[in-house]
Amino acid sequence: MIATDERTPRTRARAARSSRTDAAAAAVGPGPLAALADAGLEVPVLGGGTVRHVNLDVAASAPALDAVVQHVARVLPYYASVHRGSGYPSQATTALVEDARATVARHVGARDDDLVVFTRNTTDALNLLASAVPGETVVLDLEHHANLLPWRSRRVVVGAPTIAATLDALDAELAARPAALVSVTGASNVTGEVLPLERVARLAHARGARLAVDAAQLLPHRRVDLAASGFDYLAFSGHKAYAPFGAGALVGRADWLDAAPPHLAGGGAVESVRLDGVDWKHGADRHEAGTPNVIGIAALARALVELERIGDASRREHEAALTARLHDGLAKVSGVRVLRGFDDADDRLGIATIELERGSVGLVAAALAAEHGISVRAGRFCAHPFLDRVATRANGLRASLGAGSSADDVDRFLDALTRLVADGPAHAYERTPAGWCPRVDDRPRPVID
Image (tube, rainbow, N blue to C red; front, side, top):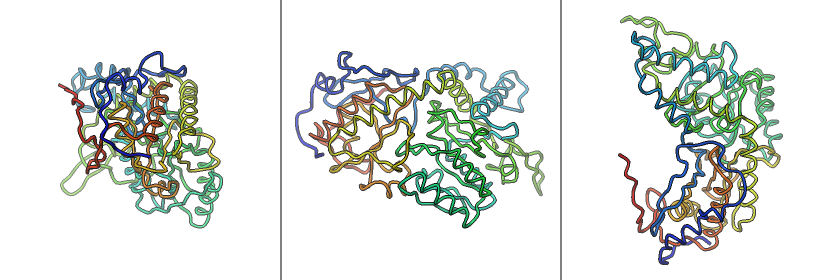
């Protein structure tokens, strides 16, 4: 059961033992695959002392790669205006943005005539695409709200217990009434299950529709080849791909985007302006009015280069080992159920969302952070309709892995979760408008100058 109590807080040594931070307790298994900015971060725990932070919330936002942080530091001295400045820093900054555009295009396998439009994030990218679709869009019920809410004319296919049956339902929907676009997630942010996207592309194209892929979760874990896979559009975020500096991208076919109204009205998007009218540019410039997020764009491109250096095979092998370790361990925790969207899903990212037979996942998440230094996420993950279908409780608790995750991270989480489910937290908590919080929080706040 899950319950708060008034027991005396554990000492620093007990907290360290329960968190298994000592080298002797660390299990043999994969270590971090890449150097990240949060590596070795120590966080305070209730009762005093610190432990090494375990970040299992990378599906929400991933820390920056060290290579990205270093690249940003090198770029900053040259920061200046883009495209219209005559000075050397301005010319260097303009080249940086356009080189980044070419890097993104190459990384995702864009066609020669595809556009790469820089946006704030995946949500922004999909809202831009929604303004360009000349007809209805069909989505699945498992979508993140970013791929569910923007479409101006939307039809939703409710998922079946299997991927095969879900794709049959999607095909039947398109056969019954044509659509301009099918837009699906590359991988569920709730279950980590990866859809057979090339099959979805063939299905959509056979029915006369284009395919857009929300790759916010997929791209940080897998190399995506837009042209080879038959995708028409791809949207993703830097902050989930180890470049949390506020940039994302929409990559895809130019015709709809050239015909759409500008995403923002302003300087840089125009050929000429008169008091009685305006001539808008075509291409990426049409949708990139104003001064771009130069640092975010540079960071995003550098992150993609670093992921290429690590290699797709290495990332898959690292994540597969940790994902198996995570799911095998969760299967042994009494009172826990792992959520699944499809019975026949045979491919998934390093994401596991659980619900509890009894008690509050919000309380467990708070205790994991406050007592064990482990970050997870509790809630509905901006996927409310999907949770309504696959979960029996209102909320879930999600643990997500990335390039900086290790076997010790997984083991610490499993150990702490097992104790919390069996015995409850060691400290008293209360539910507040901000969620579950320690009744007495003696952790010092960081001093960040």
